[in-house]
Image (cartoon, rainbow, N blue to C red; front, side, top):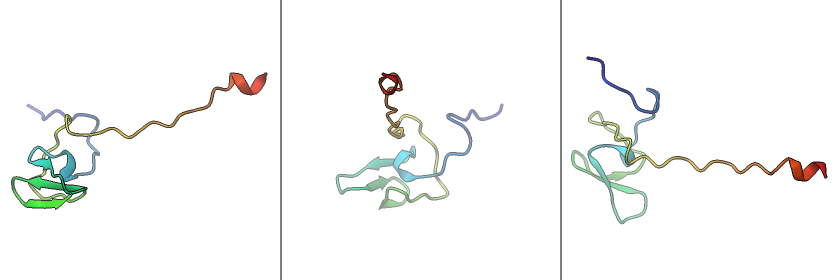
Amino acid sequence: MAKKTYFGSNIPPSCSYCVYGNRAKEGNKVLCEKQGLVAGDYSCKKWEYDPIKRVPKKQLTIPNQEDDII
């Protein structure tokens, strides 16, 4: 059976949303079960995607076009 991919298959690996990583209190650090304390953008060969931990990027606000016409 094929492995399901959530949100596409082109997600760049990052320990901040890995199954084995947990955010540390020290800024942008991640406490990894496999590697220890690492940077948030670090990734190792054991990286496995966890969609629950991923924080979506903030969407841009588009001004209302109707206000410009009046």
